[in-house]
Length: 445
Image (cartoon, rainbow, N blue to C red; front, side, top):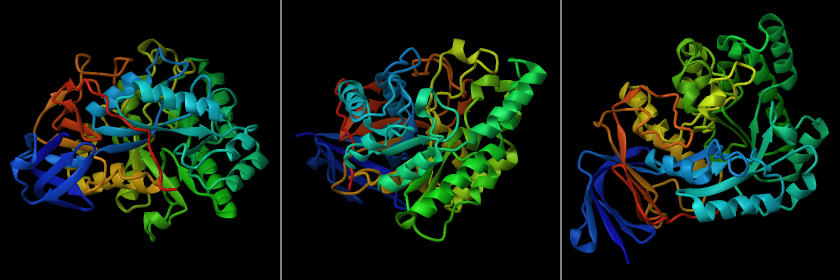
């Protein structure tokens, strides 16, 4: 049996910070107290001055396997994730082949079982023609359903209104949506292509994938959820206007309609396109500073429930293409917590609120079993953070397979020093454990 004692940590959990010790035995947290004797442990880690957080649960990543592994794969991206404090990921279905059958879902689960460095689950993709397969899903088999209501690859765009309503009526699982109105985007793109051809200046991206496109799609999805009683989660909200669609007058456990914001929409604004170019081209687009401020307001007052990454790597060569050929998305799992800790140090968000939005709330929203909190009897998914260790993002320390980051050149003043995964010290000051103790997520359903 392995027993690890973490001593003198500032434990951030359930809206408070307390100084204390924590004992891990095998996979679980077995004791939390103001003081625990070192005699109980095989190994002692002195965390004096550091903060102990529950591992981050990232509910939206694209790890590109199978079929797109020149960009990244489950092994490379999950390894980068644990270095950034992400101990659990939920991966999306737009791979090749797409995750739109139970067989394909289980194939991805098997890849993760054999290669992942973090705990894992996957979303099942809804399409215009796989409703019967969707109905066969075991609710404990995956995190939920993903629907693309804006531009997507292949047949992943769900644009048949009757099919959409049938999907909303057919499942009790969380339905997560990418909300952008396809007709609006196509018309905007046509106008800009007539003017510029394919080499559209990147500053026009948030005008093409506009506030109107986002709001139209989000508001329709929410109206349909209210009509059908479906459990809807709106991914990567990017506009201030959309935040008005969500409520904060009831606890998360009682919400039927929830929202997520991504790190890049909290960090960047349209003023950054001039310097960053297509490296901050995402769908939905990074929009104005006013939108960014409104997203922060909604996050802090609990209209927005979760912070995620939408980690979506592409190669440098792909990203350096002209506007119409440069894919949207970028890698974020290694750097998202460091970026948000900068915002904490600026006074924008408390440590307690960060933990709520990145660990507690994803566990609540997806009914994840025994994760997302620092509690006795829970899996020991934990991270230690040093708020006084500065470092600069550069190619020598980027772990993504694509070998670039939108934060390249940024100096952060906090670092994840230790990541525990199911009780195993998986990451320790830049070194990775040879043991890979990972688990498929289980759900309280």
